[in-house]
Length: 196
Image (cartoon, rainbow, N blue to C red; front, side):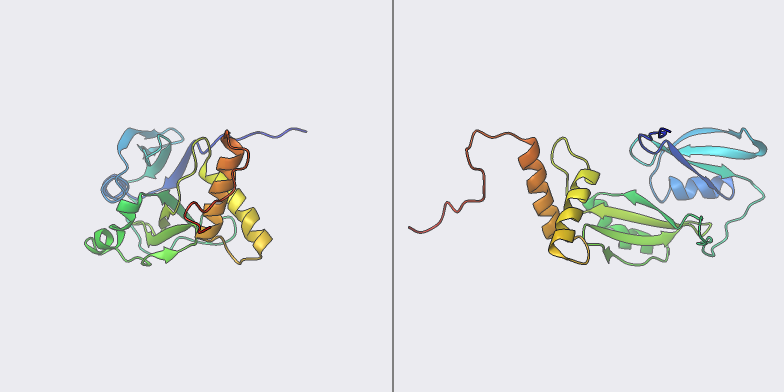
């Protein structure tokens, strides 16, 4: 028996409302360029709109002019999607409250997640959307996941409840030490300002 090895998210498809509401939210609120449009090949009564969330992958939406936006929360039963999270820069995150407020979009306000900051709000059909901003950049040649697994190991070893910035900083230092060679015989922390 062998795995079917995934190599990243290809796309995520959601059921949307009408075409214009869909474009207004995904491009007009979240800034995702509208890149492709065709019929839903499995249901010719629906459109299939494609948006680039910023990494070249795709968020696609099935639209139907008979579906109106509803503002209640989408189901969160087992097996349902709880929320979608999109990466934003620190500059964008610091503007999120003001930019959501100016549209009258109800939101959670900023949430401290230890390794990232988050803010939550609903799309026009009640799907919970998260804007997430990492508090770190991975070292060259590493991914956010590389830093997270190393920070997790540090957090568990120290008995801390959740990942904090100190775990991230230590994880990054460990990853750099493993990945980057040095001519120094001993590369531990030093105090060049020390007395004596």
